[in-house]
Image 1 (cartoon, rainbow, N blue to C red):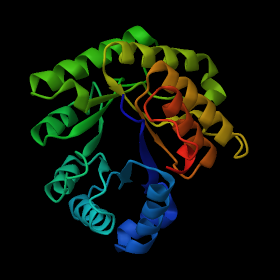
Image 2: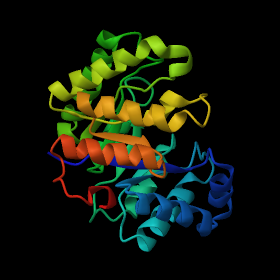
Image 3: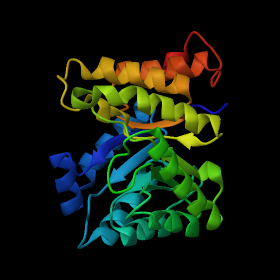
Amino acid sequence: MAKFVVIGERISVTAPSINRAFAEKDPEPILTRAKQQLDAGATYLDVNIGPAENNGEDIMKWAVTLLQENFDNVPLALDTANKKAIEAGISVYNRSKGKPIVNSADASGRIEYIDLAAANDAIVIALCNGEGIAKDNDERMAYLTTLLERGLEHGMEDQDIWFDPLFVVVKGMQEKQMQVLEFIKMISDMGLNSTGGLSNNSNGAPKTLRPIMDASLVAMCMMQGLTSAIVNPNDLRLMETIKTCDVFKGNTLYADSYLEI
């Protein structure tokens, strides 16, 4: 079985320093966060440039080139609502270490991102929602079916469509957590890949609680078959949990030094 894929979330316009770095094309804050995440064990880096309606193509090309030239063609997830910016990023992307990830499609207004991924031989994160969050797993499955059929119609391999059940906030949506876990198992039983912004679950919780909440949830999700997550790799408790779960699931061989690998 394959190791769990950690997608580092920390290169994002939601961080003021990174937002400024993209706007000013200042490489240092971006390179610093990239190195921190890769040193901590990230497999992919998410590059979230926001809507980037005006100069998104230029920014994404610059960011992709910057990161891949400095970190041996590190694989990237291109995260923006600007389709042309994603296409621009893919045009300069070196796929020697892995296909680019298009982040993301959904079953409604963003379904054409499936087409974009198919046309560029990319992986796509497919959100199992439409206009809003699905009310139950029947609705999630309907959205998944729509997304899967769209990808297959455009010649994609089903393994290149990574389904996102949408992790919801515990604080206010506690009753939905088991639904999400059950849906991950449904995705896994179909032989499909899954991912998502797992750390969304602890949004709004005290900082002291977030590491244990995220680590506990990732262990439960991996047991259900989750194959990837968009997380903070610099959360030591989280990464130690992922590495340990990979050992128990047989994804990696046990060694006394497994936490250091």
